[in-house]
Image (cartoon, rainbow, N blue to C red; front, side, top):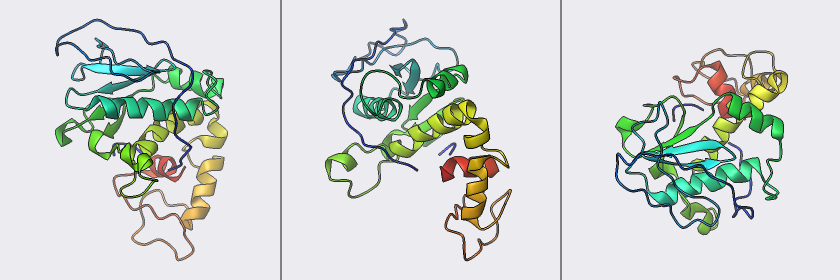
Length: 217
């Protein structure tokens, strides 16, 4: 993952969301898909040229490289919608968080090949780690990482921005203080070993303190 688990229920969104169609057919025609709530559209958005299509959820874009399956793109959109509108009334449950996400130009992009990972300035999600079948099989087998990666962009661009003293990733916030307790101490980088009393021991050495906070929540 590029950056930075918490799970909410996943289901269909009852209210349709309005999507904006952007021009551009550089990759050929785009199939709009068959989801009742979302439409896949072509785009010409600056900074996301290598991707050929997107879905918008409450105005937040999810982009996809051409090789990404439509079903995976739509799955990510439904997850994001459930996180933002869990009561499914068509209105974001927390307007402050949605406003923060928009102010931060929050976006997600989906990739298929390893060379595409980390290629764009946004949270990434690998198509092969997005597993809709995990839900259909009674949440058994390999975990659907789309739940985690979509949640990351909502927490670090949304909650951390809307409520910096509580959900900010810096030292001294409520989130960071709770994480320090869970790790058995304040470690700005991954320690050689965690204390025995630690119950959160994430060990990715490419993940700095802020990143650790995102992974923690």
